[in-house]
Amino acid sequence: MDSKKRCKWCNLKNELYVEYHDNEWCRPNFDDKYLYEMLILESFQAGLSWECILNKREGFRKAYDNFDIEKVMKYDDDKIQELLGNKEIVRHRLKVNASIKNSRIFNDIVGEYGSFYNYLKTFAGEKIIYEIGKTTNAISDAISKDLKKRGMKFVGSVIIYSYLQAIGIIYSHDEDCYLYKNEN
Image 1 (spheres, rainbow, N blue to C red):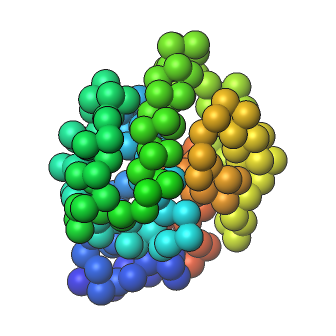
Image 2 (cartoon, rainbow, N blue to C red):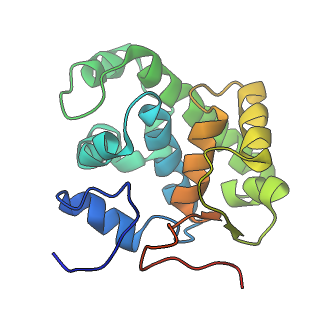
């Protein structure tokens, strides 16, 4: 392990976590497939740590057909039972059911806006937001409220804020992290 100073939440003993921190978190990635995967994973995080979800990410990719939204939207009761029996993922019935419904709503939003990022831009604009030490803001509040109105579950403001950090709309590396920067 190198001697770089990282955000205090990053478990330096977990190589997956360090890799995620260094090369993915807060880096803009607005590809719909990535935005979809991260939304599903973040919704499973509710009440758990991101490290737990990250450690199960490959299991989720296998179980969820590599996050092929067309397949996930068609999951039936047999597939739900298969997911609930899969030790490689979080086996929570409400979250599994929500992931399928949320997939359909995500797809509807893409159809309405042309891409999920176009939808997010209606709330966040196109600039990167630099802030640290927060778990929600007015943007995450508004997106959460709208997604819930559309019928999504496990998309509270804290989850959406984490999602916006994950996909690079919000940049939140700690001031003493080697990746810290601000808008100046």
